[in-house]
Image (cartoon, rainbow, N blue to C red):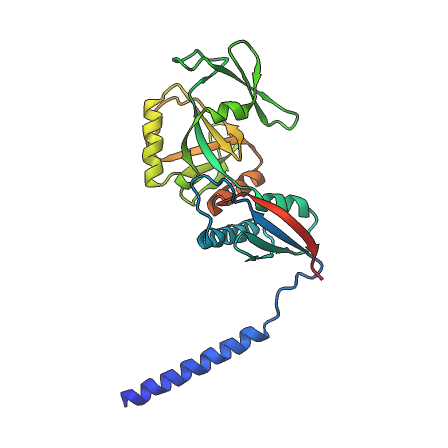
Length: 273
């Protein structure tokens, strides 16, 4: 009797699988006719600490898919050659901005500006007097960070960042980043939580460097540069950057999706017939 029951179960399972396959084949495919096909190529030359292989390519496809989802766009992503990716987008108004957001590296770094002090604060200890940092606002209300050297000459932020040490990166974050309100300033911030290893690194750094500046840098742009006032041991922090709620939410979703293993460049774009 048990053998008959088993045989019947196998037959039913086979019929069910066949029915599901037939149903899938008859479902209408999502139409992207009239949209845009973008061919992106990974810039793998000179990558530091990253081996470009099939796993890196699969990671890139997954991140691009998550970014489309975060932007609410029903597109498609597939790998072409090992270092090329095909992204198909529906007809959308701000196509250029979407493509730029897709290929943004989203490389988040926490950098110790050991040679920097704020103009409004005392020089904590040598070599903190090499550069002076001033913060102003542009016409959009965004913070602008200006560095000057010991004799008052403006110094590019890239020069200062190149001399700084990376303390943590986006890889040290749990994928639970979210946009929220700062209860003290009521401004929109991005709340982050570190992994167990990141929590230890962050605690060790803040414990040893009270009074120094830790810049939060996204794709080589300084979002904020707070002074460490006390050790931070709980493994949580906030990124402040004059965000709108929408911008903060998009940044949170992009950080949760992860940073691209390599920069992407546009090879060509074409219309989808």
